[in-house]
Length: 153
Image (cartoon, rainbow, N blue to C red; front, side, top):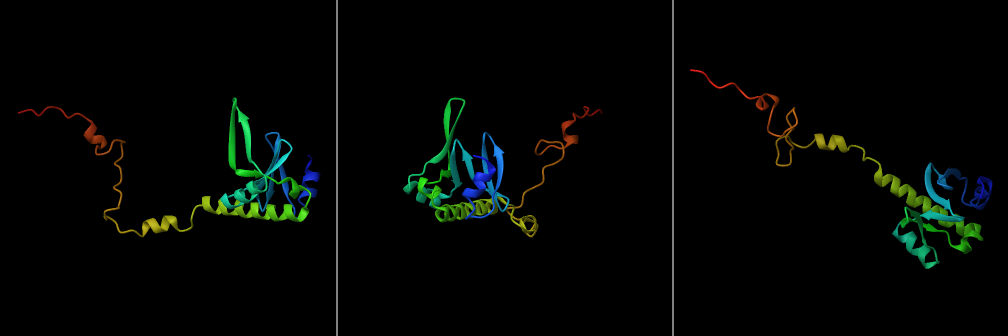
């Protein structure tokens, strides 16, 4: 399927960017991949709730074979056949998948203020970490690694 056909299929959802990958394509909106096309099948990014809804409609998780082993990715589920014939249904599912993509992106983004929160902890408390000395080994400084000459009388 070419990019124009994919754009037409998702027209009720809105504009999508299509990026070729691994013999298929990733579908992007708001800069996030919310769906993929592989082996003539569309798959939507899904959390547990969307996956359960899609499973109830006959969808299956995305799977592929690598080195003779079938691997399944439960984070992407096939678009139900009837949704491919109903632009509003497909648009609704695509919006849910985009919501999942946004939630996943926010969950992995570093939290603002995390570094400053660590600095606010009192020094020397039970949870304070002691700095490791230079030279690698804990409890040994570079000077302690050298053998001293025997004491002379």
